Image 1 (tube, rainbow, N blue to C red):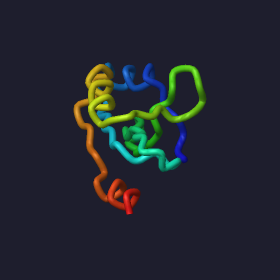
Image 2 (cartoon, helix red, strand yellow; image 1 turned 120 degrees about the vertical axis):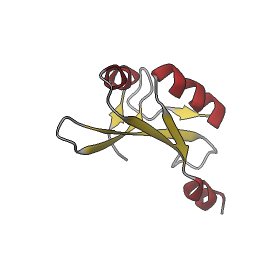
Image 3 (cartoon, rainbow, N blue to C red; image 1 turned 60 degrees about the horizontal axis):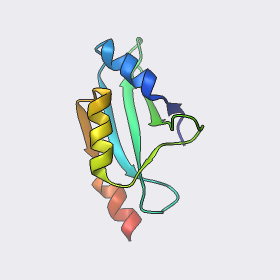
Image 4 (spheres, one colour; image 1 turned 90 degrees about the vertical axis):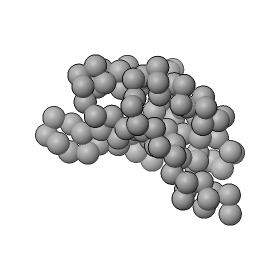
Length: 93
């Protein structure tokens, strides 16, 4: 798994007008939960990835539905939220 990224860091990147995108993926545990992978470029232009972290635990934040993930992405100021349908199709098989 990639490193975790906090809500505070995402809000900081968005406030600095950094391009921050997010992708919803099935959680690796296979319990029908969803995780959010965040993609952004650092000051050198290198693409960095991380999973949205839980507030007080060092693990990825999970969502029960795409709607709840979408609502949080709007609160964080994310403009692009994608769903990786290929990953979900593979998880359902």
